[in-house]
Amino acid sequence: MLLSLFSFLLAVGILVSFHEYGHYLAAKLCGVEVERFSIGLGKPLFSFKPQTSQTEWVISRIPLGGYVKLNEASFDDKPLWKRALVVAAGPIANFILAVIFLFILYISGVKQLPAKLVEPPAHSLAYAAGIYQGDQVVGWKEEHLNDFREIISWNQLRWRLMDAITAKNDFWLKIKTKDGEFQEAEFSAERFPPLQPEKDPIAALGISPSTAEPIAWFEYRADPFTALMMASERTWDITIVSLRMLGGIFTGEASVKQIGGPLSIAGMAGQSAQVGWQSFMGFLALISISLGILNLLPLPMLDGGQLLYDAWELATGRKIPKNWRFQLQRLGVLCLLLLTFLALFNDVTKLLVR
View: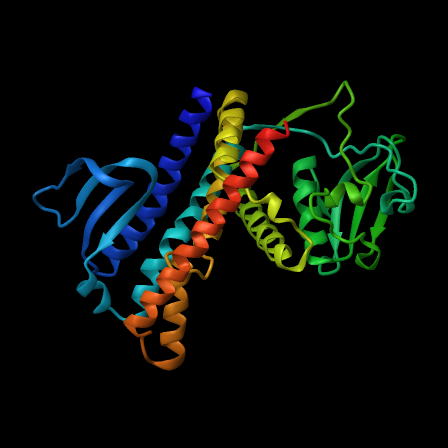
């Protein structure tokens, strides 16, 4: 319990600090005066203001967030593109941080599970494609690719599958059989089973990793350039798939029960920390991406809401009236409260049914 709490607070501290520093750095580069940089919410516990700085650095009582307080006159005086950059810099910082975490993982060496598959269920798409027990996926191709790209692990394959499934794209797998022969397996998007809430879309295709002993786990270590490319690609994959799954909530292809709150995050933080620093760093990368996506939602009180205001100003040449902003802020607070309540309800429900 204490490990989960500590890990959760550490994760929040790191991710929020980097997010707010993105706002801070962009503001300074754009000539906007920053009055306060706070880690945490509520009344300050500790504050420090260098004599040569305009910014007060604060640690506040509630360790569940943070903020950068800008000088309103200084901010409003700047061109639209600078104001938009300052707002967008927070979520962008979260995506950059995810790339950094994943980059460190790939250059330090991380344990990987080979993309070796179990016998697919009869009548599944994988079964019809000719996949058998012990087959290993070594290549991946989609329509826009001229040749197969190498697959080195189940984790890599899993994100490629999620991307194709959520985008409803045809794909081909290059299979190495138990006899050492190579063959291709085609998966047509027209035959994909419908996405169903709370069901694994990969398993629905009949594709599952072999976890039978002995498993030939291996350590993958990349050179710096390859690690950077892989980290960037993985961050992109997770972001795109997450956005599609978020959209699936409104189409019925995903369930609101999948929305997790602080209790779920704390539990995952504790579990990943118990496994080791690499697992915890992978967890931080995933949550950093989620935080970036969350802040880009077009809701007042979030960065995405302010960017929506900026889009309105760009389209009409006028700022949204202050009385409109006030009403939209109230609506935004209500939406965030409902989202928080839903996430907590899901957390408590999961705890009760264990």
